[in-house]
Image 1: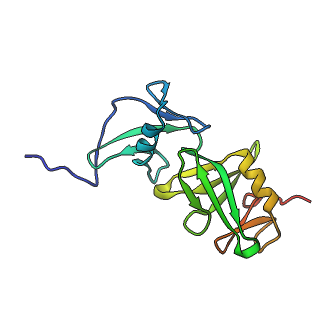
Image 2: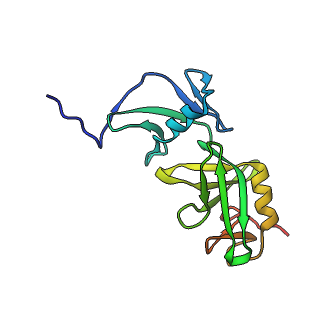
Image 3: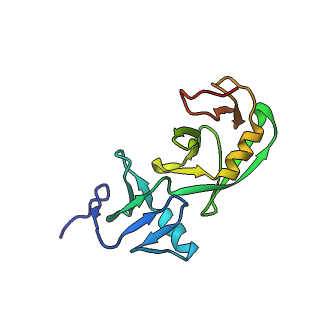
Length: 168
């Protein structure tokens, strides 16, 4: 009998999966309309060292095309102030996380301006929605980093991309 290699699942090419820039999941061209199915797939989504995304189980993996980030941070909850502040984000699949050492805020410069993301497990990221980013900007204060930023869970996160000008 053949042995199943848990660390090297077979690539399965049955079906096309795609996640658009708004965090909407598609299978074979149509949106996946059931939130529970999206949450199930999200639980096995991984990103490899090349930046490719996969739905991966112990026995197979399926390629997923991701236009930007697979998730969107759609809600911000802020508690406290200054260095004692704690920022929590809710993703479009309902998961809450605390911005901090395990989930750092990352800002990248793009042609359209700064694009904020938060790091998740398994090399994944969630892009902050525009309203959430504006809420963060309202909380911005001077800090030890370049330009203004926000504190969360004892860490300071600049709201400008590395190397970008902080503005007036």
